[in-house]
Image (cartoon, rainbow, N blue to C red; front, top):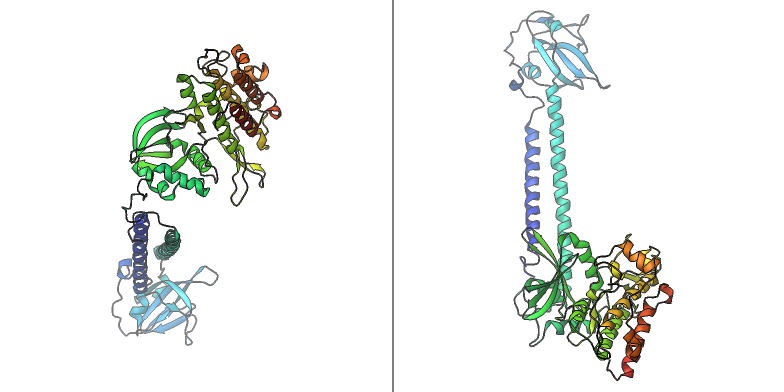
Length: 533
């Protein structure tokens, strides 16, 4: 792994900057320690204290207090130097005034500097030699500025010390992070051999579809590892094919191979993360569930785009396909069976060395089912889906109960009596929606030379964009369902489809068919007509 490898260059730059900060802080700290050792406790002539002129040798009398010598009499002393008065610290925390005599020898230093006298700290000293007892009138001032300077110096030392410690801690954490990242990448298998760093290795003639099929054979929910890392950088956006509440859908090209790119708005990061998490579920991959390829974040200047890359199906959604394509019984059963097969796999919990949780879609509709080139369907748009593991016996569902498309909402969702703690409730709500989808498909099947125009469920009972109140009035209070054409009763296949859909959209969730029961019923219908599954 190169030191400036593309995937790690930001990490190395950060490491160099932190090392530089650490060395600079240590240097400043050393300089400051040296400089403080050279500073005197008080500044000298800059503080306004004059130098002491050379004294004469004539003895004089001084007052003494707390600094009286053994030969002192009546608090007086005699000296050939100076009389002095000092302000000193008390052990109790206060200040006291003291006075006495200074001998000529060494008095220049004593009168100019703050010294430790008799184990007391002298804060200020004033000297005189004008006359006998001249120190009676001396009043040395407390050096307030000196104290603040000491405090400021202490704060500066502490701040610098803290900054050095923080830099050291960050440096250690960064080194630990870099070590484990390097170790993890070193143990990861390499699929890219002898090609440019930004390219993905494929065997001659191998396509993106082949790589995802390899992933399916391993049982993984996600796609070929190196594809997921690099494909998003190499996609060319060709045309927009749709737009929803979370973002836009584009048809893109990767090495002349078509892919679908769902571009989420930056404000919908939570939806992007949720859908990516569902698609990466172990053992989710199935021929009737939209094939997931990769998820990526692309930053272009100030714009952040969240990509979800999947297989591309040129027929588009089942909604679009039914609007333009009439069906014969075989095509109708292919669409219905493959949709039920995908939903059955989604709902099913699989046990083994790996465990696939049961998943409820929660937004089933004809616009969220795609039609493949061979006339079969695959379930898409898993952004609102929820998982359930039987061993945990819990459903991770956000507080909001009303989710999905209002036109396809089950009665128990509309009147807010869905049991959120019982996962079967979510599966049965999916089955209600699936019953409406079967109705949409059956309407487009030709019988006796007649085919109905495509319509959405409840088209004759509701406005184009119905409210929850509108839906509740029709579905819950009046308990109405989409109208069933009379021509269906004269066609055996459509009559069986009618029975199937009405058992799916029953008002009582417990009376509805499961996805597995619907799949098996449709399989029998296909076998009776010699249609290969």
